[in-house]
Length: 124
Image (cartoon, rainbow, N blue to C red; front, side):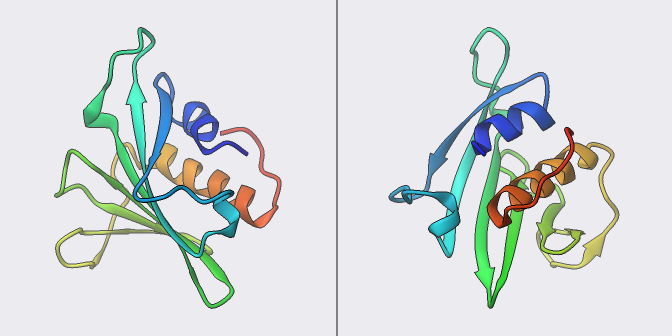
């Protein structure tokens, strides 16, 4: 699955593109540790930087983990997603409640994680 298309599906109405930090892997599934920027644009193609996200994909043993954070707000809770979602305060790493706009971000992480481990999911 194309990660930008997953973001388009889960984070409407924006359109999304990916930029890798460093050299892009041949496939996302082959990387054991990669970071990328999910850039948002409105329907006219104008950048919406306040909706940009940073996604880190890494393996811990046999487990695939994702860390999703907002680029424009370093105080916004971060989402860790392994076998389940956990929201954390960015400064302390302490667990916190899901923010009001967190459900679509959790859906995006579920979709990305499932596509990387080969599990089918319904639409967001």
